[in-house]
Image (cartoon, rainbow, N blue to C red; front, side, top):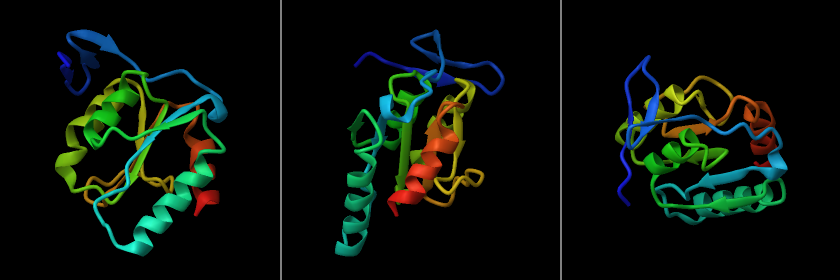
Length: 143
């Protein structure tokens, strides 16, 4: 795709050398959400994931699933996506670079419960600063 996302702590985030920043969308209903099904394929996990997605579809503009936690995080950093969450990704290697890119693009990174992001928890949410609280509430209502 000829795209290179980069970031250095304290020096901002870039796409092909040009600065990027998280979106300024303030309304959940106009937001573009990305998520993934996670790595577990047992029936109860997939049912819970599908039910959560079905509930959220009524609260956002649309949903995307790219298949890559890292690229979804970069999408939030570049303002292409307004929100991203995933529960049950592979491990820290899936989020380490994307986490830095989001924060350097003035986005927020946290646990879907609203707590601080823990790179070892296999739970991540990213958004701009305007949507965090509203989306945490929507996620809690979807469970």
